[in-house]
Structure formats: C-alpha cells, structure tokens
Length: 381
Image (cartoon, rainbow, N blue to C red; front, side, top):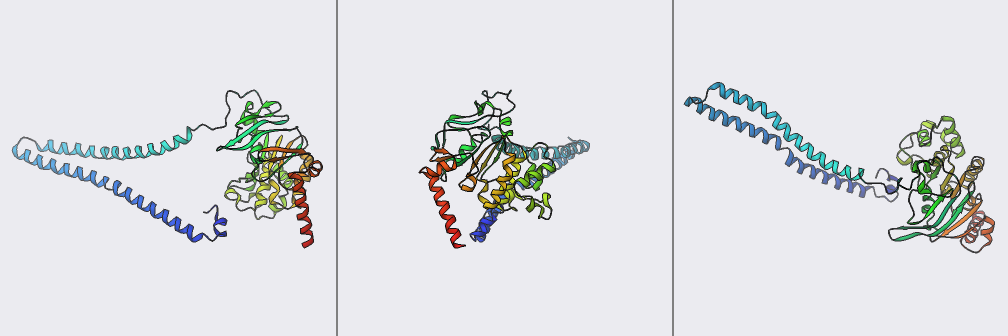
C-alpha cells in the first residue's frame, strides 16, 4: 500500500485498504494469542514440576530421617543436586523449541537457496570468451509462455554499429524479442547469435557487461541519485556520472534539487517523475559504456523536444554502438537506420522510415495516424 499509495488514492480506496490492514492485524493478534496460550504455560509448568519434586523430596526425606534410614546430609546433598539440574533441564527445553523454529525457517530458506536459476552458464559456455561483438541475429526464434506463442519463427539481423527501430502493436512481443539478447529469458526454440556465436556460448557476466538495457519499467533503488546512476558501472567517477546525466537531459533538473546528486530517490524511484526515472535509468545504462544498447520505450514519458535533445546528444557517443530502439513514436523511429515491424510475434516489414511509410501496412497506418493527430493538435492550439 505504501509503494502504490498513488494508485490507492487515485481510486479513493484508503478506507478499504485500512479495513484490510485491520483484518490482517486482528488475524496476527489471534495467532499470537494462540501461540502464547501454548508457549507461556511451559515455564510455570517446569517450575511447578521442580517445586513438586522438591516437596516430595522433603516429604520422603523427613520420613526417612524420622525412621533413621536417611541422614540429613544426604537429603541436603540430593536437594542441591536437584537445584543444579533444574536450570540445564529448562535450558534444554528452551533450546529445543528454538531448534524447531529454526528448522521450520531454514526449510523455507533452503527451498529458495537450492532453486537453480533457469538461465545460467552451462556446459555450452565457452569461458575463454572475454568480449562480445558482431551482428545480432535472431534465427527461427520461437518463444512460448504458458502455452501462448509470443514469438513465432522470428528471423532478424541487426548489423553491428547501426540503430534499429523496433515497433508494432501492443503485446506483439517487442519486449520479449529484445530480452533474448542479454538472456533475460531464453527462446523455446531457435537461437539468438552475436558475432556468429550463440549467446549461450558467452559467459553471462561477459554478455551482460557489454550491454546497457533500459526496460519499460525501470527500477531505481532507495539510495542517492548518484549511487543509482553509478550502479553496475566500473569506476563511475563524478565526472562520468555528470556527463551521462547531461546526455540524458537530466542535469539541469538534478541541480535544481535541494541536495542535487545526493538526493534520495526513494524505493523504486517514487520521488521522481516517470520521465525522470526513465532518464535516470538511461544515464545508468550509458555509464556502463555499453557496446550494445537496448532502449525499450524509454522516450514515451518525455516530450518530443526533450527526446530530440537526448537523441542529438547521444548520436556522437553511439558511434560503433549497436542500438535497438523500441518505440511507437515516429519522432524516435526516424533516428533509426532501419526499422523492423513486429506483429503478432512475427516480423512483417523491414526498411527505412521512408520505405515503410510508402508501403501499405502497420507502419504506414502509424505514420498517417500520427500526422493526423499532429494536424488536429495544431488546429486546436
């Protein structure tokens, strides 16, 4: 509820969330009371057992002394031994309860720790590979998720050093397609190759170090803005951090903040706007000096003027870098050397902006719709 407080407030569900929290709190109270009813009587019960034992010792010992069968010293000695044994026995019971609780907790942790990651280095990995470079190729790639085919025999090549624009309808598989490159997931069949090698041959650390990835929903950590930008980058000095923030057109806004680069961004970056979060994630990716840059709908939360400024600043830096721009905006796609259209999990068209704009299909419709939208906006302003 704290993380999604804006969503809660936007639909006026504060009272309902409070009732849910109260119900959970009462369930916790009831469970704690039940635990207390079982656990708390144990210590008095132990004490009662020893008290009864002491009373029986005195009763039997008094009779033995009266009969002359037991001496007073023997009774005192036995009682002292009984007192010596009392605390160790109590401690054994207490430790036994801690062991049972620990075993239950460890069983849950062990279930997580023993689970092997679905994507990892394996026998196919060539540990001698230390760098990644070359063209990116998707060869007859199929991805199925929960029985649904997301990508259907995709074949696509991105030559090294170019900017590829990737567009298509919502839920056509664009994010899944680019996620295959850094192996955030693996294809069901087919393969993704870089430099003629299957990406599974590269050690994961080597593969991912060569890439900068900015996802649709970037994650920032509850730390300073500087620490978030430098996260994952080797030797990210202040000058580099400021440079990549300037490239992301965020420097002026950061300097206007009270504590500037020491500003705490909050959990998942909730203190920043959506556009600021994405530009901060872009700066973080650039700080890694990647050879491959994947930008998944990064500019959708910024205005066209800001987007144009960022792309103009990035152009000189991206020479020799292979870039994949996922977007629905023509203002973004126009900066691409080639554009690929993905529809229903298949590549349906590839070409330049001018070529696709003249060819009937999704991209020509997108151009017509956005031009019509711009004309309508101009007429109403």
